[in-house]
Length: 160
Image (tube, rainbow, N blue to C red; front, side):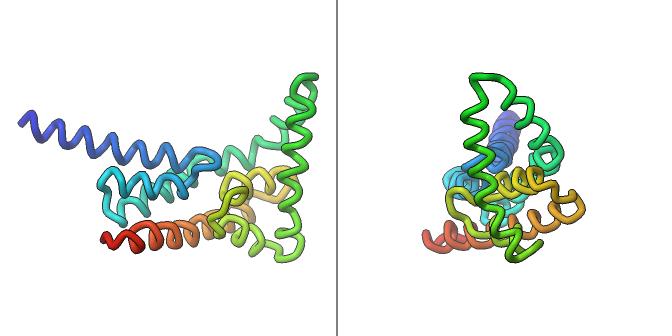
């Protein structure tokens, strides 16, 4: 009985770890899916838990980023880095201007550094894109990125 409890605890711990890593900025599912492979999760589990984790912080980010940036920029020590950060996020705005809602999907779907759900959510907040337009586009982008990274991670290493 003790072995079953240890096994279940380890499974839940591994799954929660994948969700937590997917929710982190920069790493997102680009980090959580290879981690899931390392932890012995199936590709289906990696796909599901990475998607869930990557989407967890998105709605709060869309709602709070602009307000938080404005407050942080009022602190003298924080003004310069957060002004730079806002300019960096706004540099991605051309995707939205050129392609409308599909721009967010493309921004998230391409699994490269500087792209992803966190960037898209903050951009949506900064340019005041409504939640009802931003959230589905970001979710679709995360889904596409999830397919790409899962296929590359599990396919390249010949694992199922």
